[in-house]
Image (tube, rainbow, N blue to C red; front, side, top):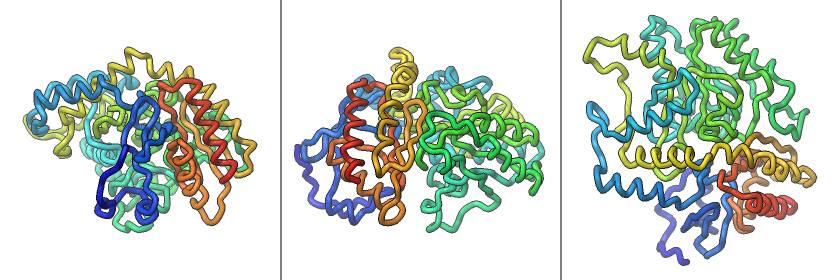
Length: 436
């Protein structure tokens, strides 16, 4: 299969070393099941479900046909003051699997947009309650909450924000939960819950009343898979309740079965006030994200406005796009009919066994994992991220795609993977990392 573009220069690629890539491009021309095909005709197993987007694998005809039929029937309708049936149907399907009482769903186009939308929801909620003075937000070191200005302001990953100075003020970061003295921990670490008391210290320093919300990834994914210590999320929830602070879980990566439960909030038994989601919402077939909020947040915001007035001055041209909703509906139906979340839970132990078997490789510094999500961190060599960057390239030409953040491989197999697929992933990781 030939790639026929005359030039690669015009495409400015995201989160990519453009000059380096265009010297030796890695171009994917087809996806089917758990495999990609590269532009040279090589088979590449997908070890990160695309970018955590495709747990059902690639080339699902049910999704493609649903989108096709929707585009033929109604390709677009303005989402302001009109709507389409798909938005209401998809919102109902999502609300059925979110924890109670999170039952109101606002559609956006990406995880980044979902975080900025959640920030606005928090502000609008507090203002409607007469607490518009709550203007501070709390995030964490090593946090990733997208790349829009709001999410960037919450970011605790220095490379994502050092070039961009125009961020929101009044954001403070708790410490991250990774402990370099406790390596190769499988699942939730036994110690570290006390790190949640950073939030209590912020409340003592600034007062709890100026803080609007705390944003937390239940498992910090893009930074390299940091699993929360036992009791940590519970303590965050307790402090938020004590001070009237909203708790927002960023479930863009962990949502829709990645931990074995529908959402990580259910897996860890901690219910936030607001949840952000994207990626697996449509299996990556259409760009889409969403924000799900507790009933009280929705009613407080909507009932504070005069009758017949717009209550929440926010939205996007493509919010609830008909084709994206069609994809989302088809995906939610597949999750239900195939028992996809149960598939992920059943495969988890086998996956983690394989992942942790890599601990004997000299280049491996740490391994972390939960559900069907794992991080394999390499010892730095030649500067932070250099070893991981080269390993990602080598791994691709060895027949496997995995997302790397710095020196950490983020492994997230599709739920439809078999044990044989997991074996292939582990074998190709070993082959590559032993030479890294």
